[in-house]
Length: 261
Image (cartoon, rainbow, N blue to C red):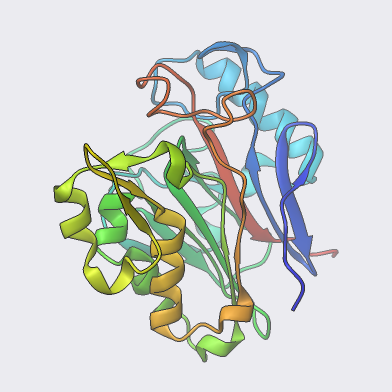
């Protein structure tokens, strides 16, 4: 199988595989002050809501899918997975609500539902079936990864792991992600193969590889797992919470089945 890659567009990197659209927004050419002229996509960091809503409209125009079709859970770096349907469309998109709270992975079997979440270093994992309409998005920071949130999401699929494509998306790369023993111990030795380098002060961690190892352990074929080399340490293009000491915006990762009807 050929590598599925993220291609550059005006406001996002992304691609399509059949009817499945996935992407991750850039930080540039926006209206926000997080930092100036950035394309912030999060409602919860103090930005003007109108800026975020206008960014949503700009992205919607590019991907040809209205924000009315998007779903956005409230993430907490936990391990909870939730199914969403067309009835949930619009949740937390234009304004935050009490719905879909404490959810770090969502999945659906419905078309024209865009699964979305905010990121600024954590790993977005995109999942879709090649034989039915199952589609999922996972927010896999180290805490969620330690709770095996990716495997929990894969377990919601009603078919065989061989049916699934897993794309491990834009997040901070190993060379810029140093962690301590607490993080390494939480992740579990069985998933750390090829994913950590010991340094004088801790470990450089490849969280993309940890999640790849979890997908392999679940039974997803290696040929169906795609890992992008793009990283949020490229702060000319992406937000990085770690490298910018929290003083930055948030990207939007998204995936959905777009019907031609």
